[in-house]
Image (cartoon, rainbow, N blue to C red; front, side):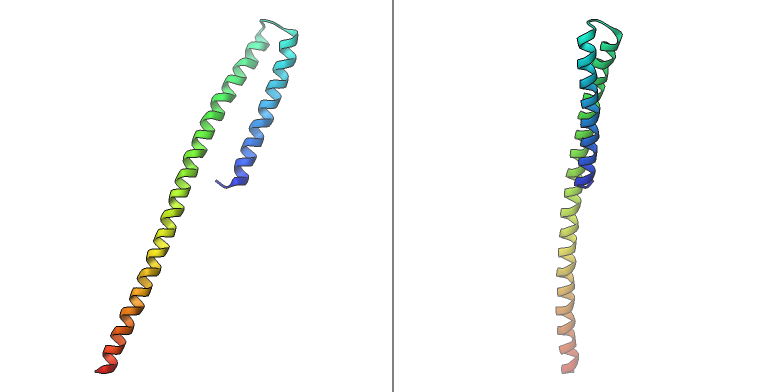
Length: 100
């Protein structure tokens, strides 16, 4: 995932959290032990665990992406080394054939 996608995900999370917190504050001011208050507490709890899970998954994906990039760069470097070796051996073979 690229950085812009992360920003979008986190911005959506923050909007959701802001809404929930603002509603929670307003309802908590009016009600003490009510069903609405329980719903808001439950929503905050769900959001927390969903966000925690998402962050964990994003972190794991970022790690895997970084590993894949490193492996890709290593493969490219090895390919370039092989190309150089093939050129070197081809030149040696060409000189050998020219000497015959």
